[in-house]
Image (cartoon, rainbow over all chains, first blue to last red; front, side):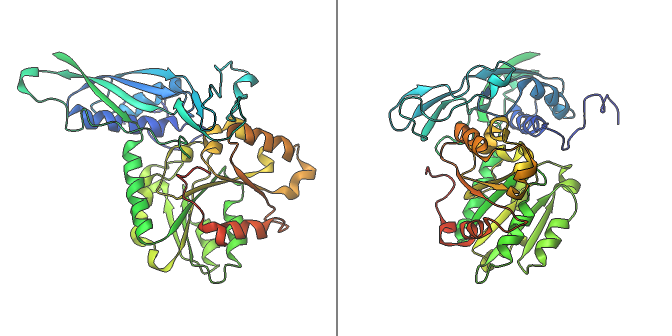
Length: 164
Length: 229
């Protein structure tokens, strides 16, 4: 197989905490559905802080997952969204996982309401794992060979604990 | 060459979620309640299932066994005369470290849904990926063994947050490991205040009755995973 296959890690496969590869495969699939066969130059992704996804790893595995697809060579731009919960009982809003400090502090989360100590909450922000937009290279925009039928499809929220 | 930006705003896992919902609809039509059982490798998923199912009189239970390779676990469970279907993620899916909705979908035709009321999906041992991929389950449970350490809820919050029951297994090892049940429960409380817990030792049998009743008893028919406690 041509290319630095080993340098970039396995094309697919299990390993310690490399589930970013599985996620990267899903992101490539979403971009492919949207691109309508056109080459993709940029994929923009939003990752909430409550997701167990390290965007830096996602970058790395995106390159591997994109190989042989319309996303090959595309840049991935990611944005981290803050975590914010709202208490179902008293409507207090709080961040259960303040900014990572790369120390043990990073692990100090609290999903119980600081106001009334209720354990029931809704996620306002932080559960996102979204493909926000893509840039496609259109050789002739007048031809109307635009992005596929999936483009502009109604977004649905990423699965997560959210309501239960 | 002209560059166009196309708005997508799709969840990266929407495709998986759509298939998971189709699976769930199939399970609902057959009136089969589905538990997605997850843990790190070696926490005791298969052993705890054996302990529960060796006295499963009158319960119609099936198991969907997910492993990267081989059928060692499925072979063990078959001895208990319950229907077991094996999914290997290795040959067809490149050795994925979790089951996704499509893999479960492909196994549904092999499952005797008319003959069972409860399906346990034993996921691939992993605390990371299975937390992300719903497969059509009603309930998400996990097993955490004391040998893994008391800090795991803080290190794998997505997994611990997404489960309504955490079985703390291998408590017979407590005298030999640096694991405080109290500190583990406090850590769990930080990430999932509503989680239910059962302490078990599949080896000595301690807590096994409670585990079996939770899995097979009246309470096992419980509320769906989507509902709040």
